[in-house]
Image (cartoon, rainbow, N blue to C red; front, top):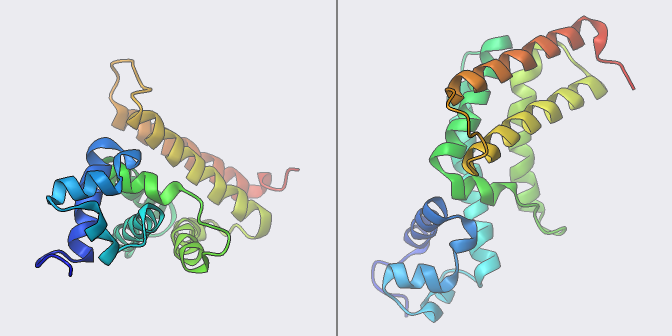
Length: 194
């Protein structure tokens, strides 16, 4: 029998708290059970082991990220859309570092539902870049570039990789503005390089 008051949303919130406080690797059935003050076997009433729990965390993270991107991109295009997308991405990584880590993991080859959810997130990067008129390979390169820049910045920041006493938000804005200058150059004909 599941404990009264224990349901999947409560379990996922607890796992999210652990992930965001201590990292995704700290999320184990034992750590979640301990925080909930229950025995680990009770968790199997809600999830099919640790891989399933982490899969649920990935879906939760993707849902929150999707909501954030929807709000950020509403009514925006061009430079403003890319800036809003970038801020939403970094804001999510800062607020939910454990969930951010969960959404970075590749799904199992046969997990079509998780692949689709991850593809929807990539779709927001495409949407943010729509105003530049990039098509085909240049559009793919631009999406890869913005994702790589944002992930690199978020990961380095999380790992304490920026040691100099300069404002990280200024660095982030400079990075995004530099990317925007590059996208404009691609739009003006510089994006068809092999």
